[in-house]
Image 1 (cartoon, rainbow, N blue to C red):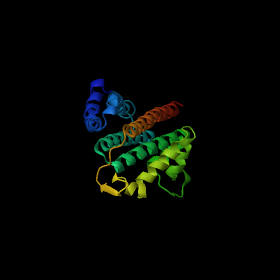
Image 2: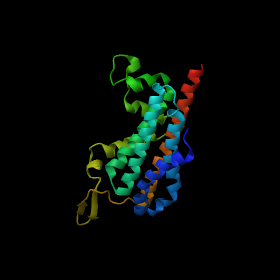
Image 3: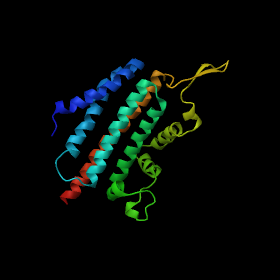
Image 4: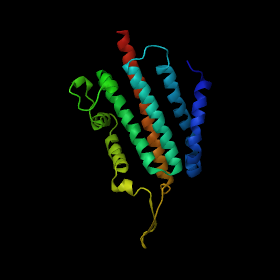
Length: 224
């Protein structure tokens, strides 16, 4: 088992990603402790649910994969928001939603763990067939109403649609039709930046809940 100090070291290192974000949006400084605790909890989950010295099974692989995927998406979103990179930000937010959808689907259908670790799309064997991610998001929308719309909005920003292609265009003078093309996202309003960060918070907390729920499902099945 890892000590609290062991868990704080990598989380503190990850907090370097938050510094540019605070510089860009001073209004987000109040969320610093929340960010630290969420980063730290990723490592805590690895220590409690993965690095236990026991056998590696399908559920362990899915849980570990979900934790690492969530952590990397979280890191990426922090970096992107602080460095004005719209495409990475929206990719990471969408990725967090997809991880949540997968975990929820696994809690509804524990037998899906096999396909999640060894399956593929359009597999001829039902137990190894991986469904479209939209099916999983729709299942998630039944308990978190509106998350499918959030997901669709992010897809419009991630796919090579006009909103994505023009994400870094900055209007300088609308009347004179003067604009700048940059590699950075024009700075968001404080309100919008706060909403993006809160979205990351909510989805990450729900991921934590689903990881713990999934671990309990398989712990109980082993006892039986």
